[in-house]
Amino acid sequence: MDIKNLIIMKKYLFNIKYIVLGMVISLSSCTDRDLPEVGDLPDFTGPTPFYSTTDVSTSEFDCNDVELWAKYDINFQAGSNLGVNGIYYDWTITPADGVVLINKDLPALEQAIEVELASVVAIEEQIAKLEFKLPCETDPAKKAVLEAQIAELEVELEAAKAALTEETLQNVADLEQQIADLPPATLEDQELIFSFPEPGQYTVALKVTDNLGKFDDVEKIITVNQAVPTIAIPEIGEPSFEDNSLFDGTGDGRDSWRAPSSSRWGSVFQINTDNDPENAPNLPDGRQAAKFPADGSRTGYQEIEVTPGATYVLSYFSAFEEDSYGDLTVSIININANSKEEAKLEENIIASRTDDNIGRVDNVFKKHALTFEAGEEETVIILLTNSGVESRLDAFDIVVK
Image 1 (spheres, rainbow, N blue to C red):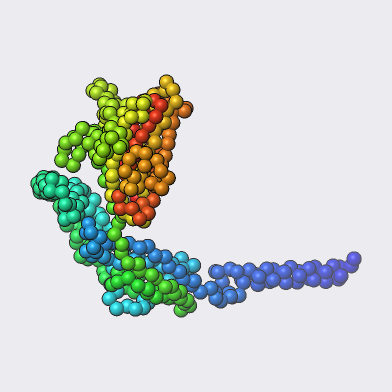
Image 2: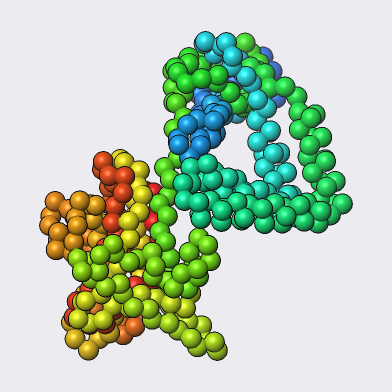
């Protein structure tokens, strides 16, 4: 190749090099944020709003289920697909008459005050529970006991208040000042509490706008339900068969379990006592348990009040001797049953559970649960029976399911 052609080829290759380099720079400018206004595409992504709710309503009823007051409060928390980029919120509620806005931080500060005053609050809650029962108690003896217990707790309450330290009082004062300094909640807050004036349906809309002016909204129908009384937990007398565990501090552990007629229902069970002061008792609760002889002649009978329509879970512990086969039955019986024989009729049995000693360890307690529905009943019978071997029951408890 002569010199002239070589020079032409080098010039040609040099031009290609710069053409390629220019293309690379041009392509890079389309994605390089350091080169503004060069190849950038506008961002058309707008906000996609959503919100969640948490019902924080509270209410109080008397022992006759009459509403004393109700606060229909719901916490609203807004969100968007855009975590940053200057998000602005705007709530709308219809109807708005009577709706009050509450700063989201208020409940947490009020809870913090209760924590500081825990010793006082605990006694106040005990007094409140007793005062709740008092107006509806018809038994003069029980009413007198309730009044005496309230009087004792009021003395304890004053002592607890007097024992509060300066540090605790200052902490409470600081929290109260934080509450006083809380800014009013607004319809532009991301999270706030709506306090509704009454039950009903409300339309709550949320508009979310970003700092580019793009916006979208979401709308929901919020149903505020009427407050209803809490289902009362039935009271089981002497549930762990301990002496002096009746409401007035008396009782031999089985007085609450005596049937109205021993001839129709059988004699009440015996009591098994663990009197060893040196060792922990071999019982689920306390030092006494109900003992049923092997001949099945003893029973336990107790009527309890229930709420119609409610579902309950009754729990308890059983233990057996192991010398032969035996079982224990705990039944929930309709009060139409008037004898042990009538309690075996299917129409009178609401629920029943039988446990036996197969595979059990001698005198080791095991927990069981029996679920039942009250249906239309206001009172039911807890009936305890056994057969085969000496058996024991202890630590009854009942909760609303």
